[in-house]
Image 1 (cartoon, rainbow, N blue to C red):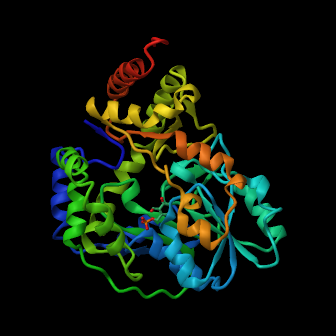
Image 2 (image 1 turned 60 degrees about the vertical axis):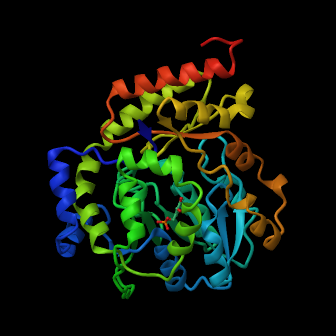
Length: 386
Ligand SMILES: Cc1ncc(COP(=O)(O)O)c(C=O)c1O
């Protein structure tokens, strides 16, 4: 079975690391020292979630009651934060080839009330951050980097997360740590966070990193979990729990070592998918946190059937984000959105598919998935046999 979200490959070495994570006292100093080579001029603070880091950034940068340039193609978890801090997001459409924000829209959507831009390197594909920094400087905009999907990924010689004034990461997006976020910010920010505990809900998220449980949750958990997750994860800003910090601390170096292999597998997978008519994301230095493509145009209406068909074959893809923030009815009403301004975002949301890609996959796993993908495509479109 293949899943998109981080999975644990349970070998002897991993078992020890993971088991001990439940009992050890974290070596925060040692971890910070190791991470300082990623972010040499910054301070690193572990938070409960990435969104907590975002709230700290808003407070420290004095962004309450201001306008923020924001990607239209992103999830809607940010809405309660905008409300809390009275921030008006000014949405920029997505670039159809990268899914990242359309830089060309930056200047024409900036007004004297616009104080910042939120730059998300979506699914681990870096933005043209230097161009964004140039325009931001011209208009005196503060740059926040959203590296939720982009730990250890470089643009040129520097790691993402070093370019903006501050950045946020979401640890459980790329490692099986159940929960956790990271704030990378100027050294002079004074931040004091209360540690949170590893809750029963976190334990369920942890189990979801094992294929057996992931399968059960996918099959039976769909009815209950969405409401529980949202309610709990939106509680107040806090520090990371010890277990997730230990898991991160014992797994991130291995993840970093495997990154090159992951990228090569991602490029191989992309090439195979392209041959089958999928549109892959163009752009250099993709770190492939998620392997996301667009469904072939002629099969766009069959995207969801394709995903269901593949699920029966044991390949569990996702449609993240089939409902991005600008399609949220509350956002549409509150910000009086005109959806004609976001054609690419809507196009991507209707055609996006994220395929499984794990650090421990081999080429044979990709080949096996491709075989299954061909089979399901043929069943959807028997006229054009692949
Ligand atoms: C692009 C992006 N940025 C930020 C976040 C927030 O991360 P977290 O879930 O850790 O709060 C998410 C996830 O919801 C995300 O997908």
